[in-house]
Image (tube, helix red, strand yellow):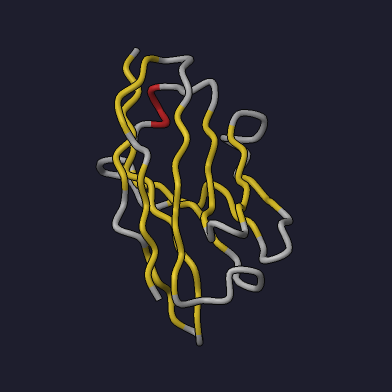
Length: 114
C-alpha cells in the first residue's frame, strides 16, 4: 500500500490550493481516505474523510471551505482548500487503513501568509 501526496505550497490568506493523494495497493472503491494535518507544536488532527462510496465528513474548522473528493479512474483523492487562513498552515498527510494498519502519505507542506 502506498499513498503519494502532492500539491502543497505557499499561498496568501484567502487563496486556494488543491492537494492530491494517489493510492496504490488498495481497493480504492472500498477504502476510506483521510486528510490530516499537523502544525508546528500541535497534535496531528483529522481534517476531512471520504469513504469508498464517496461520502465525505469534515472537521468543523474547515467546513464550508474545504472539499474532499475521489477520482476513481485516477485512484486519487483531492482536498480542495478555499479561503485559506494562516491557521491552516501545516503539513498535510493523507491516510488509509488496510488489514488493520494505518498507511500514511509522505506529507505536503501548506503555508498561508497573512
